[in-house]
Length: 420
Image (tube, rainbow, N blue to C red; front, side):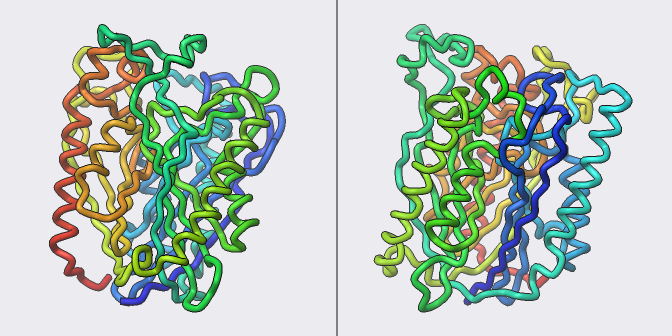
């Protein structure tokens, strides 16, 4: 089974003056440090056609996800369920979610709705004709351990948690679990010596540039923007960055300014360029023999917590006791990409990876909805920010992880697919 791909890119930077989504309801952007993008890939294997779009945004409400999928599907003439979205989670982009803590003025509400319409239109325009100029490629997989992240939850010996952004003097004691995998898929035309496109997955909040002061008021893609720029410069091919399960993972040196943004992006990009050489030189181990596509969505019922949380209930789910949350899984040969409905913490993300029957498994952060944090049950015992602001019951993330693993095995063991 051969695979063909195309890549696409479109700038989606709003004008300076919009509210930024990362820290509180009233952070006004004063300038643009670097542009925001939609970056993506179109895949075709003779049976299926699939689109993957990665947005330099914090997250997308469920109704917004559905609207973008429908618009892209109509533009590219594929089923809406074959459109996969994900967000890098930059805190230096515009609001694209409705939260109970947000009370927009009339002018700000108009701005919010305007940008949503702009995003739907530009998403559809970006993928128009995406399947008209495809390249046949081989797919190489590779991963390295890259320790550029840390867990922001310091857990004391009595199993009580301290939230490190509020206690930075304790950062040297950071001891909680991290996911250091820098995962890559290289799409290389037969006979070529460099990739036509690179897919990257790494778990760390894009939170390097948010130092107090002017840096906190500038629009930026944060380190993923630097990473893409440097990978494209080093490899000559387009780069699509996706965030992994980074609900509790920060970059080392978080909130320290744009010098750290450049440093982290370039460090990861150098690892990716070096890994590309390693993958190409080992085709027997790293080239997928049959990069067939398959895509599936599964819905799991998750109860909301009855005790409430620090933040008001998400407006979209007010007065509801549960939600049918979507997991969207895209199989590319021996790799599985799993879209999750919010901010999955690293522990549950690793559980999915550890229990996956695929050679490579990557989490797509803030993909199918925004349900806030998705922590494991013991986080509610430990306390601190992620547990306090989680809208779901403590059992919900286990249900989500179980649903993901069950579906991965079903897709691995039942490879038969229907043409679209």
